[in-house]
Image (cartoon, rainbow, N blue to C red; front, side):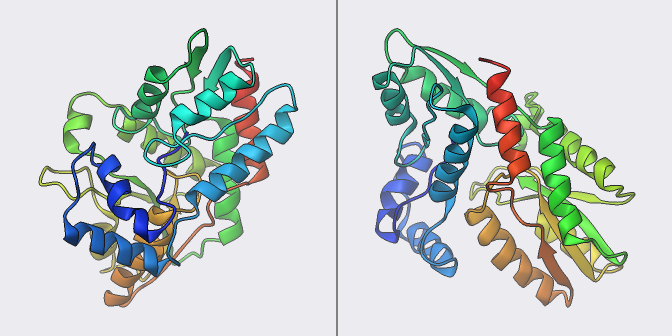
Length: 283
């Protein structure tokens, strides 16, 4: 289960309406988001990569355990995936939100969407978090090792920001992000690193920080090179390809610094092995 992304730029108004809980977006927001998507080629690879992850998992599990993909905010919707599995004779469904850290504002919404759309006679069990799974930490560590951090480069772990009110109400998300960062850093042998949040929503309420841009600004006084490790995401999509590769990179250039990032997990064999382990533990 994942967030979902529009199939084309023409779908942007309808997609944003779904993301905003039924509230139509302004023309300005639609224009801005179309420009953001155009900057990464016109569409996000989220659905394609999630399908590839599902196919890789299905190959590991074998023909007896069907795997389907469902999105919360676009096609194929979670309810359609549940219907597909029910039609194939499934009586028990294991839901895997493709987000490592639990939050009431992300993972819980996937679970809620599945729960209300569950076919009659079918049970549902969700995996709420895998933020500290050893294979997840290994998969991220492999990406860091491949990037070969330089001695004069500051590693910044990032995850999606959340409204501050959620954390104040007891949401464990920020603590889980910190645990993921610490687990990856320990595996890589990083003595020094920072955490930042990215992709905050366009609402007047405060969102948790520091933002990635603020972190770059603050650290640029003493550091000139940055390696971004997005540990809150498991594949390439707009938060990676635009928010980091375009927006954050532009900020880094304006500060006369350099910025690069680790490769996303996508269909990393270690990550797929983690998905298999999560599922097999519940079969």
